Length: 89
Image (cartoon, rainbow, N blue to C red):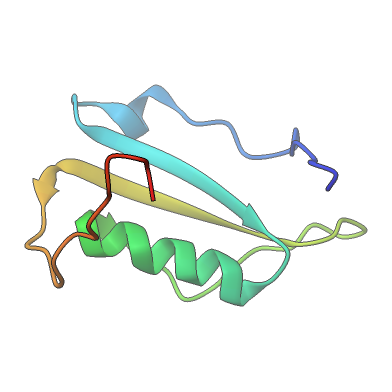
């Protein structure tokens, strides 16, 4: 599988991260379903500003999504954590 790093993303400004615990995530995926699934997973754990639109760059494959996450706002778990055995399975 070939990984591609997006170098043309909008820069994150210092004002986006004005306090400890704030996080900006630029997610990239091959389709909307993939990045929205990622957004849904993050928003179940922490306070997150969600969006219902993605961006596409002309001539480039895939879609992008920017999330603003507040790690200080831990949300209640909706399901118990998965059990992991000592051997890592």
